[in-house]
Image (tube, rainbow, N blue to C red; front, side, top):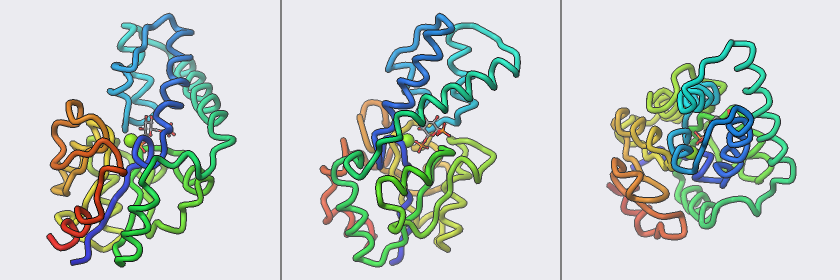
Length: 217
Ligand code: B16
Ligand code: MG
């Protein structure tokens, strides 16, 4: 059967989660808010605007829209500065192999990311041609765990939700896939991604026989 393979971007295809963390940490430090890697788990897969709200909540702070807009701009500029020299070497291990395997087997591939910076990252890492559809933070109004981003992706590929497989590194993203009735594959620590139907530490641990099994299922 033809399935739809939907990839999250940050933390699944590229290790940009570390850059998001660094950029947010700078803002938090400026505001005198303690922001740890554990706190950062809550920001994964979450929109930029919502991420700032979570950080402000952590510091029990409220702020004017003007201040928020300034911090959001500052965060993104800082984040983009980490991406300037990005190239194919920043693809997470094993990703390219799986993308190629799916292509060779005629399987539709989509991106389902909360990021508004998704396209330039796909271009810089040279994997844009693998994607039959791209849905990112510029296309959706509801952020993960709302399934909008994945539902749109499956629709663009013309595949039923129940035949869609989502690779995700975030709790919110795994929840979004589950809510949509899709197969969720957690990439990362199993103890964090408890709700995923399958879990792998990374793509190196995903055997092509597993992908074949999912395609046939
Ligand atoms: P941007 P994903 C998400 O991307 C990140 O996980 C999340 O940390 C980030 O805040 C969000 O994109 C928005 O990104 O600021 O670039 O628009 O994991 O859904 O690919
Ligand atoms: Mg992610």
